[in-house]
Image 1 (spheres, rainbow, N blue to C red):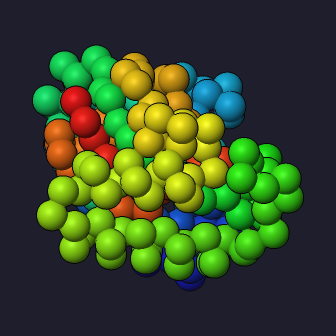
Image 2 (cartoon, rainbow, N blue to C red):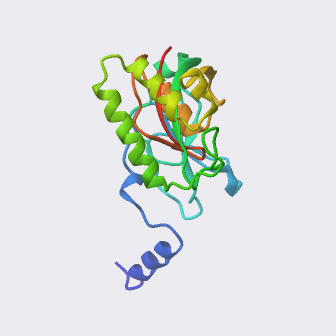
Length: 198
């Protein structure tokens, strides 16, 4: 080993060529790691990746749904989701002061914090988990407490297809089985609970 070897390593590291454990771990099935085109590169890299100094912006592509995300996936992509064209869901939205539009049909100016909104929804989720008829209880809660205008329909959003809702909401809704309740879902609109009907 030459005496300037450690210096070369330091230089590579300072240029962004440091390797993280994620660079060599295999991705869950159904995902590809791709480089962002915002760097004017068009390189597609599949399954395992070694980072190069000029490639800093990666995203992850679901080969079944054709959707991408910045966060590294932890679970395999579900091929069944590719066939799912639309869903029908109920939802209960609790807005907070940081929501895109912090007002609703219930109040002109929403001042609660995001943490307060989370606590409210966790209480609703608890009530739903204890209900004998989850669908009826969900509609009741949404009608009375949802900050979305769908409250007048018991939170029923009707059928919707991919790319019609904010991505986090869509991902959660399409991942649910019929009759399943989501965890809390955060979007620019606020925090949601979702119940899939169809």
